Image 1: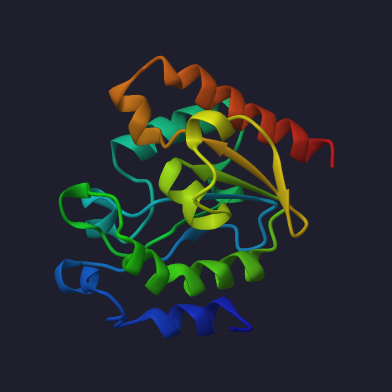
Image 2: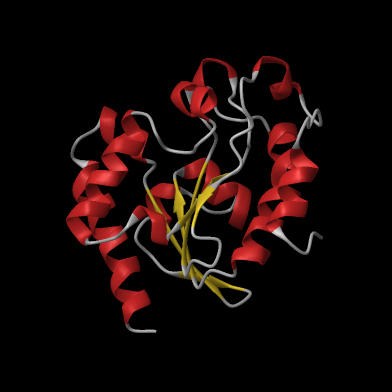
Length: 184
């Protein structure tokens, strides 16, 4: 357990706990308000994120930003992280051992941020955080409470690029998270 973001970020520099370190340009730690009430967790960095070292800056991130703008959510007011901190090759899903290597980093981020609500972006994040018994199709849009934190599973923004019909559900899930937060 780390007591500050500085300690946690320093602990990940040069990480080689799994094979993802061998091809990375940057560790994509997280970004945003380190005291945010709303946190979003995706699966892992893509090519653009690996180059810039910032989560959700590629096409999927731009789509997420557009939803934020439409809902009046300032990206700088939320905290955004991923399950794994290095890009999986060819944008494949992280493997279990890769998730496990990074999970303590993510747990520490959650402990330090202390969010009231966490939006889980996609199946990988949902299963890594809440367990394999959950599926994105049956859990999406439904509140799940664990250890005093409310979770809102929704589609990963990259899924919206493949299936535009999911955009409405994604938007509505973010809207529900925003509204719930406003009423807390």
